[in-house]
Length: 200
Image 1: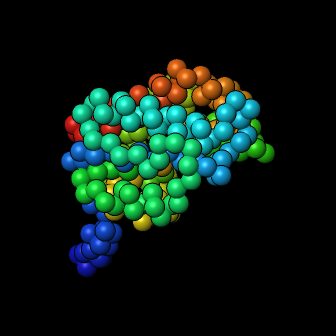
Image 2: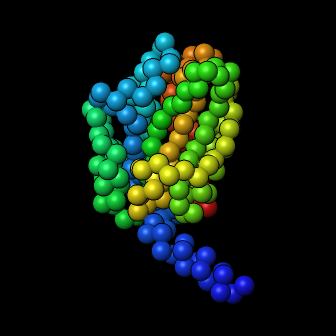
């Protein structure tokens, strides 16, 4: 049993992820998609790439006001390769990475709710806390946090999460996110999660 536990902890220690989930001073904010990569276009209100950027810009302002340094992987409608997004994050040592996305399930338009994905053990608590704050928004609900091998998570040297804020294929959810006030509240919920994570 001792040998097995030693192997488990050795595997965690060898993950290459910095344990900055409680000490971070920098938040790397990743607006999903951009440029020719539209993301989901299942909403008649707005494209995913535009919603991601809008939320990311709002999030940057709020996170700065909360006292953190911020780094944006993109600030305009430009395409940024996944490896470049990871490289930007990996330059910063006392940091976390937050990627903003939206979802779709066209054959099942009744599906709605937020999901938060992680890869490293160091990212689990941040993912759970973020989902809890997002799901407290009016009309929102939590689907799950889940381990995933997305490139921006798997290759990140910092604790990293990918947020799927809701389903644009769901008419009601897409309608909520079409409201700038709701997108602002969404960014505020993420900010509250980050502040709480640092204080724990």
